[in-house]
Length: 386
Image 1 (cartoon, rainbow, N blue to C red):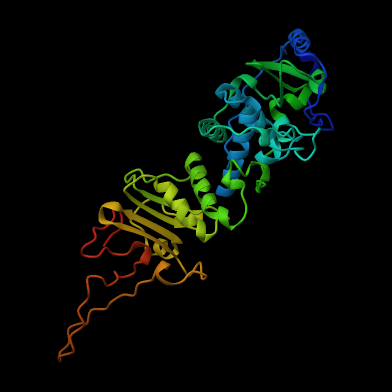
Image 2 (cartoon, rainbow, N blue to C red):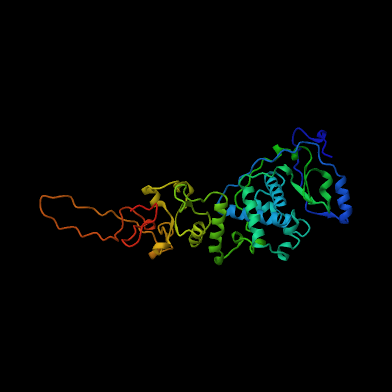
């Protein structure tokens, strides 16, 4: 099985069908003995190319939790097994025979009790077992590094696997390439198992999977989930490296707001970014291209800022503000107020009435309320210029 002569130099006209996870009835000991007799392919087993998931923060949050769910329920709380399963999911994502979203790959066929690609998604496992917080966190961490380019080399371009105590119907048509623990990994024979076949790209629009809503706030629906969604999106942004504090000020974040997150979710998003910091500033823009990389901000950047959060626990200060020009449904003290320039009268030949004194609490020229001047009794936050 897997001799070099079987490899075609060009792709066949039809893409192979992806087979559901069906196995022939066989006692575990007999299955292990049968699997042991199947030789490993003698063809090269190159490592897959690194994969980095791009797209909206919402898509990345959903993809992260779909992948974490898949690897945890398929491999159990085993880090090596989870890394191997994650690589298979990413290999499928790039192959023409499978869906083009992470959630689509993991939950393909979930609506059919005998047609799912990954057994856990249709055999009731999600309802029967809930992982510990530590196991879920570990799976999400492994999923995050896989979605950021970490390759698990031993399984190469494998698109299928099974435990060694079962014998799936599809096994005879594939090349056996690796063993990881009790799992055996396979790829397609011929051109469809070679690196050039893995040439597809993911599409936008990771679906919401209601079956994992208990685990993932990114997959919940309804108004009660908005705050939790903001928290989850912040976690995903941090994990994917798209939301980090400034290199020269670890208490300041200049970020793009997650696509699809309503204004009610911005505060939970900022709170999660700040974590336990006693002093923290979050400035956020709707357009990622408009988000600056450093301070001080230009007038245009300040004008286009959509949201800000400022925390200074030592001074008893915590302020959350929105650009109500962008979000007209919000009003009052929650709005950033555009500041007008206070002109100083020029000297004149004849006496003119004296200008009214400026209060220390009057606005600074050109500032938005999201970056207000501190009062005389309130120290200014770092990076916010008076």
